[in-house]
Length: 293
Length: 293
Image (cartoon, rainbow over all chains, first blue to last red; front, side):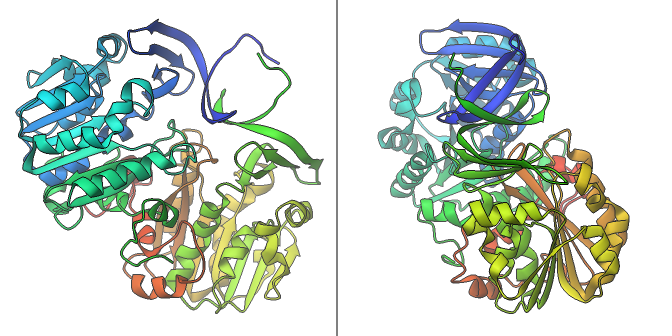
């Protein structure tokens, strides 16, 4: 038994979860809102953890950040105004700002320490924070959307897990405020936890139900994220007008994506991500094209 | 620090991997070929481990077993003769035998202890072992395919990781022997490890290359399997004639699947599973429909 090695374990539930070998704890502070830690890991590069939950690792952050931004932006294909709630690390903004049509991006995070730590330890993730199109607002996301004026083409809810500081970002009232801020063609996207994790399933179901009650079009999509619980992660997209598959121009999207240097998202992945395993369909009461098996 | 709790950790690499809380070790023996363990876990039901690698848990075995069997069988839609190499637990056979057209299924596993343990501890997985259409051969898989006579409609290589006893099941010579045994319309499917795990990537690439060299049609597909390393698992399919997407009749497959009670596979998942993230395309030199981004 080796007793002097650093291990960080993020539990899915009980005593089961991903255990990560660490070389060093680079940073560990408690902000006004949460515990903020940066680890140098053995094999996953650096990792950012908030309140003990991995926000991202350098190994697989590209999946989360590409998949929260590009499906909606490729569907819109000419978004000009973007709002991101949470995501103070700048990762989602980095992906969004690859789209040259974007003129302004408001990034709203309640915790200044997240942006500071991202600037200091994750230059590749936080590079967007110095983009002249980006305005960083250190403010409560819910208050921001209640006071802001439209019209955003895209609103991204890049929240932490639905406890404590992020709980308000999973409420129906918050989503309704987002809807008011959207342009007629606008899209709302939120990370919606893992449908495979029994302790998170009700979140997927609840976000999906809220979106379908508030918007005429709503759909859940999936991506492989190894360092998130179960490795299956969901996002939920809602729209006033555009359907994520019927209105998607894969050929045009493919052309616009050339030169972005993406590692996960491509037009085939766009269509595939919205195909749900049968148990996920059941979970969110989506019969799929063929109905239940 | 709690010192008296049982934990099982399957490392992806180094000190990083999935740590599973255990209630009890139900079985732990060493056969002529490998260590065989059965755990009662906290939240994943029972788990079977061979040489310290999780073969399946009751929590997510449905994904692996459905996805190794149904894509090929739905594409063939009238397979009569099936050969499964490995998979002595009966899980892949259980899924295959849901297709009523199957007349004979040869299941070849080198290690009798796997079938015995599956019968004793995993009745829901091993139920197929008593199906009158199934013949269990306790024999080396490579020797079996070298001596057997065709024509199989489907050959499934349900192997453990490519070390020790399973190494021969990842060789080009073995795949060529499989090809000889296939009917003109026949399909070969193999589990091909995780493209997201740096220590397994060369396996995906090698299986894909071998299949493309030996068969006119070959394609890799993916599924979410939380308890396998990284949660992203690959299978590679090769065929003499049928293309997994162009020759797939989703409507017909959907009708045949009704009543199977599947929890993962459906016709939309079939098409989606073959869409590969850009980094996986690069890994196996597959340009995708739109070329590289």
